[in-house]
Amino acid sequence: WHAAKDSMGGPTIAGSPSWKNFLGVCERELRGCGVLDLFRNPWTYTRWSTSEWPDDSKWSLQVNGKKTRVASYGCNSGSTPSEGVRGELVLYEAGMDPERLRGRIAVIVKEPAQAIYDGTSSDLESPPTGGIVRTGDYEYLSTPESFPNPLVPRLEGGSLSPFRQMGTREEIDTLTKGGAIGVVVVIWLDEEGVAGGYSVGVGVRRLMTLYIDVDAGRELGAQARANETATLRLIAETEESETYQLFGYLPGKDYGTDADEQVMLITHTDGPSISQDNGALGIVGMVKYLSRIPQAER
Image (cartoon, rainbow, N blue to C red; front, side, top):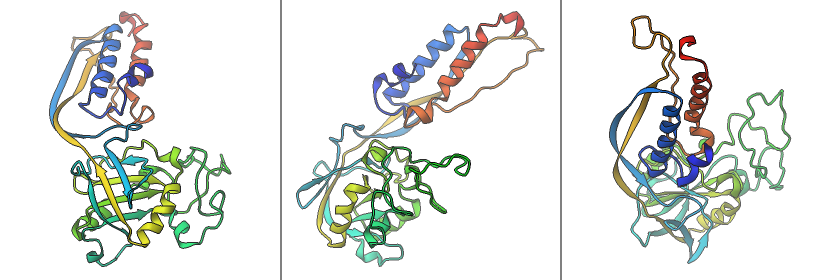
């Protein structure tokens, strides 16, 4: 099922070709399990899209003509002309004079990566409170006291999840009002941890956003402090896409009568990854199991 879900490539964002393939897989499986009265509750919305990792042909960053490694893009964050936007880099600081942002490309270094640029972290491989996660295991454990992992740094009041580091709406508001023409966010993870990440709509089509890993961010931080010139490209398009909720019933012994009782199984189907949006396959699995019980006994 996961292979079939992933056969179109890219995240299953609602209304996208990948999502339509995914819902088609689920619907075929449900019908095969004896699910009845399947119907769709449709609507349309404006879907934003660009090239999907590892295809970075539509998003890039160059500083003084030299390409910088970009790990991901900010979804729904607008679109540049084909040649991109060009301006001086500036290192973003909370409370800075908005005039320092006007016409520039801002660089946001998310905590605790800031320690790298402040010089307070000398050992970037395994510092006590700052550094780079090399293992790919960058989410907090649910109970770190019971399941300690020495490879995952312990942070107070923060998270290593990329979702927590991708820039806040307040930061984007400040940059937009200040007249910035783009933003690059440095994520406190190595390339493997950031590449292909999906940002879940922080930019809301207002300020073109790119994400880079902390290794590439070392050099970019220095370049931003020196106000070097960069070109940011993020070529995207929007279209009206139809999406829908899919409903159906696995009939029990009283289906269609006044004595019928129902148990609802519900999940979202749109998302950026197999791990985050595979609830529908879980439901299909449960329905398949229950379908083996004769209807007269359900």
